[in-house]
Amino acid sequence: MSLDLPPPAAALTAASPPRSRGRPRKAADTRDDGNRRQDLIRHAARLFRKRGFDSTSTRDIAAAVGMQSGSPFYHFKSKGELLGAVMQEGMQSAIARQAQALERVGAAATPREQLRTLVRNHFDILLGRDSDFIPVMLYEARSLTAAQRRELADLQARYEAAWLPVLAALHARGALRADVKLARLLMFGALNWSVQWFRARQGATLDELTQAALDLFLGPDNKGKA
Amino acid sequence: MSLDLPPPAAALTAASPPRSRGRPRKAADTRDDGNRRQDLIRHAARLFRKRGFDSTSTRDIAAAVGMQSGSPFYHFKSKGELLGAVMQEGMQSAIARQAQALERVGAAATPREQLRTLVRNHFDILLGRDSDFIPVMLYEARSLTAAQRRELADLQARYEAAWLPVLAALHARGALRADVKLARLLMFGALNWSVQWFRARQGATLDELTQAALDLFLGPDNKGKA
DNA sequence: CCTACCGATCGGTAGG
DNA sequence: CCTACCGATCGGTAGG
Image 1 (tube, each protein chain N blue to C red):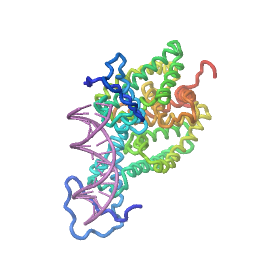
Image 2 (cartoon, chains in turn cyan, orange, blue, purple):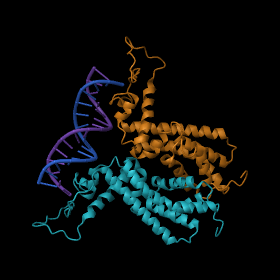
Image 3 (cartoon, rainbow over the protein chains, first blue to last red):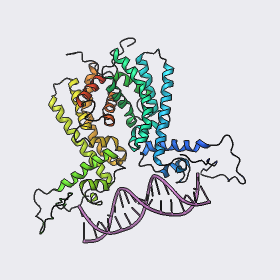
Image 4 (cartoon, chains in turn blue, green, brown, purple):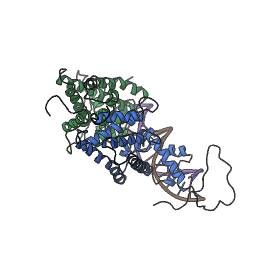
């Protein structure tokens, strides 16, 4: 599948440093194998989000990481595989962060607090630091092949799985009135659409957003403070 | 701005009918001026929705209406203007349909019934018959120029204006707990995202969707039937 | 609205 | 990972 050649140590910036002469150093334990690949994924995510998959050329991406136009294809078989890598990495990170957030709040928390945790974490993934991967996944899915979509489906199902028991518990105690399945779809829409209008450093904070979403989705909290 | 030549009467289909010979009939009062232009807008909307703006070529659109590759540019100065026309037409139609729906339900209706009308109409515009225009506007806005965006902003503001007093009334009587401004953004997201997952002829109907949305957004209806 | 075309861009590749 | 390139596609235009 992938090429066998290890990537040569590359240090190419605006003012290129003097080329090392003589015999290249032997393959050390710390070869920067994945660094360039990661650079490509990260910059591709940023450009795909900003301009869309179709409007971003592989040349744009190469230039962003300081490569020549053909070089991304040393790391990825095609532009589409680079898109798939962005989404895969985004979902894996999202799942990990979601698990950590739930662990932090604890299993003894009320369903309401668990939902707050999920919503707050979701906003962070969509709008916080390094938040290009999931928006790309949400808004550029059309450019995936059927096979790529299948590969992602499993990760997405894992991410969504954490929501259903929380919503079911809220439904059982009357805090969530709508059908659980439709409620999840509508709620995800409310959150995911924030990518279109939220601007950091202007308007609401992520905490305020989270509060507004909970206020909208759940009736008043009739067991505790006002 | 636009060319002065009236478009010749064109009747080109798969099996082209015999060409009319002799002198073309004189310019009648009913010249099919706008028909071809409308055809282009309608088919462009369908293709833009299905494949996206960037992945749809002007050749695709021309072929869909039975034209040659260069002919769309007789009707539109550029591909981007065709996109703008799709969105303009979509918004004008949406505003008209929303006004009719509100008229039908009547000003004496409760805020809850007015919101139901707005939501149901919005779903119809997004997911019902001839529902390509607004999804294109929602999901291809990135391809617009700044000038086009400004032209659309006025229409969008008019469409949104109908929602705010209804939401304010619901907020005033405690049925809507969240901040009105954020609530509108979150609600629009919940509705607009349905474009991504709703499949007609499978799953819920638009009426069921509307009910679920109202259940989610508003507390229980504590003045009337259960 | 068609015919015939241009210039630019793009994804991708061979060969080192 | 770079160099040098290819073939295809695309938006758009002149001229009728």
